[in-house]
Length: 273
Image 1 (tube, one colour):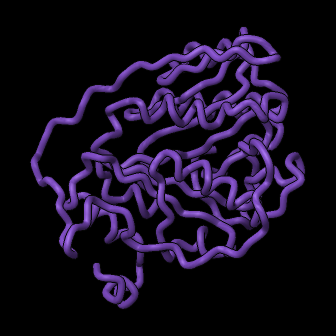
Image 2 (spheres, rainbow, N blue to C red):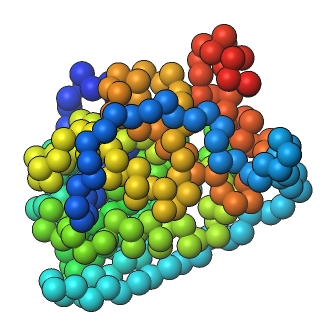
């Protein structure tokens, strides 16, 4: 599930990136502008980036939990949910976008992520029912982002809230729980949002409305839109490529990451890297 594929590959369970997390009123329809390349990194004063280059040891991961009272009962959120616990859960039938309505495949994919080095499943649970999740992991080695195997580069591979538990702010609460972990303070996190993973039918939105909704949510957690020539991103103008630069991320790591954004050397040179 947690991998990027060309849209033409329609085998279930092979997709990643994107969201099924609508909440609140749909934004007005618009058209996406050109995403920035390096906007938002560090502190820019007088045209110079003031960024510490100190080599510091990363903070250890922090186990976070949160209980939310809802009309459908108490929702328990936790990060680093272990594979053994996920195996005991039943996947709510309203979770369907990445698994293509196959709960067993969904559970196995999440268990795999939880077992990976650097893997982190943020789970929303009601009794023994899995009703929402986020999957965090290092990018797969077969992908552009994973080939260098940078230990400071992570991917928010998928986020989904069951159709039966929406409109109560779960997506935002899960993201808050995720990034309250100081482990990500000096890391770079990327995520892709592909239109063919969006629950347009369940929300009644069109692609551009959903796009703006996801941007609005991600911006609250310091994600910014960046340009790339990655084919799976560029094949649809509504697709999103978003990056979160941790508050303690080094500029040297950012430069290494930026070098991955464009495979076209001329384009990379024009954009400054």
